[in-house]
Amino acid sequence: MKIQKRESAKPFITLDGSPIREIVHPNSSGAVNQSLAEASLGPGQATLRHIHQKSEEIYYIVSGSGRIHIGGEEAVVGKDDAVIIPPGTDHYIENIDDMELVLLCCSAPAYSDSDTDIL
Image (cartoon, rainbow, N blue to C red; front, side, top):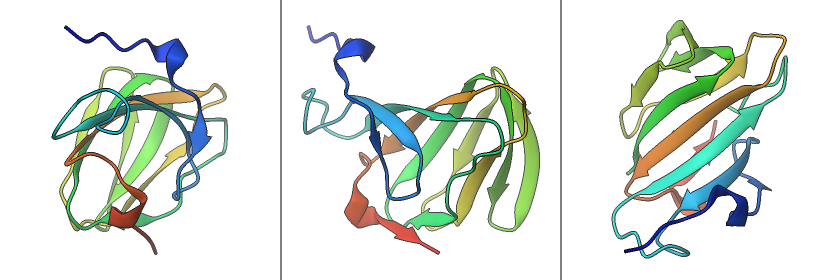
């Protein structure tokens, strides 16, 4: 049994500009096909518009609210909303709240910089 502690995941900035903690990733946890990261954006912050050619992502909003942009569509999302982002689809998220936006990012296959193109 493998249990990953959030506290043991060191935060870093991804290519899209979001500060994340990779809680589960093949490079660090023994996961094979996917990754799980916690991302956060302060009030008024946004990720850069980007695309993943191979990875499907799911964003799960833990707290705060934001506006998600996916393939030319946009929607307001908040706590307990899950958003599916198909591979090959441009996307970004912006914090539209006065509090921190915190979300979990699930990627399959696992997140990699080499699969991320900034647009």
